[in-house]
Length: 504
Image (cartoon, rainbow, N blue to C red; front, side):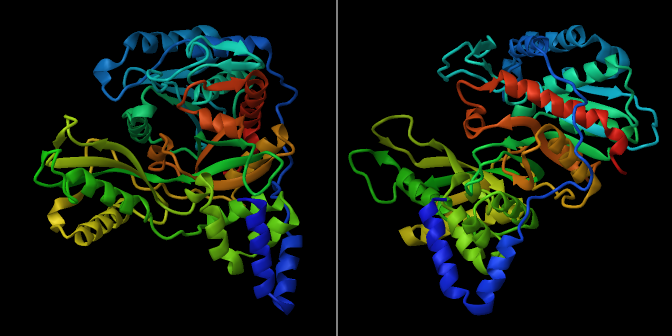
């Protein structure tokens, strides 16, 4: 979203909105204020994490708990020492809490509260990490080296920082004799990265025991810096929903033959054209209430120019959609996305294959369904078949059943909701200058399983993630600042220490 684009947008607005309309637009812009929690900020009560907390975190990062799509290829040894390591590092927590193992290596931990009749809260993370093979790291991905004030390690951002944050907070509070007013549950999956069954099985266990959480807090958003719209302050982005997911297989067929006599409709060329048509037509943009609220919060921290444009969506929505489409992060917030991730053709360099295939990883916006996204891709594939003069059966789109698919998650309450406000108060107590906004998460998490037993499922990691940090998740050189980690622990201390002020 370049400034020149915004200036043009404002100029267009000025040309359209004259007289009283212009006055209304400016008045709305001037009235924009950042969101404020209803209650007072909730801080960590003077707690400050020390270097010992960082050393415990580094020890967790050195355990290579890598999950893989093929369970038979998983190295079990790191998972076998994960829980014993936690028990050694955080003895008071495990003494006060009840441990249930889910699917052998998953963790479900109950911290008993004063009043078991109150609906509990659940904090979530996952202790598995993605593989590092094929990546070039500047430092050992499982060495947890501290270089220039940053801890370099796979899982430092996704999501062992949450693991460490919870256990450091619990160990500190339990050591002070604190008992939460309601039960606190901690769940961590050993196979979140591969869509393993641990979260689903944990939910089944909780349902079987008639446990229905009031609030669930999982990974997702963070205290984000480098946000769009020229915002100079960090903004806590809280996921109130997440997109659905489906993988689609696009298949093109032809006669095949020798590469010396190619034709316009050979399977790979036909596939390439069909894939380009699918990827270039992801559907019309749509604004949701969560997106409107997010844009209002971001604009409230920005210049008057942005405020004029984004406080008058009733007039500027088509223009804003065009502006957002120019940025990959914001474009994904508007619609379902189709990412071409895999291509398969001939096994030989000089053979035209009779069959060529592609995979689209599709993330489905909350206003659509798996069926909607699939049908759109089929419509585009059929259009390409017709344009190419081939039969409809020569270009097909099918759901890849080997990969689990999910519908978009329900939207959890935000705005004036007491649970959402409680999160806001905790953020404001630890990060006083940060904004606070709902959004729809593009990636998928284990939290979607908990929607079956909880109406308030939020996706927020209490650490500061810069734009660079967000780009390092799942890639080489993943790392987190030492001070960033220490500060994030304060959020979890605040969140757990003030549960008596959580209404409901």
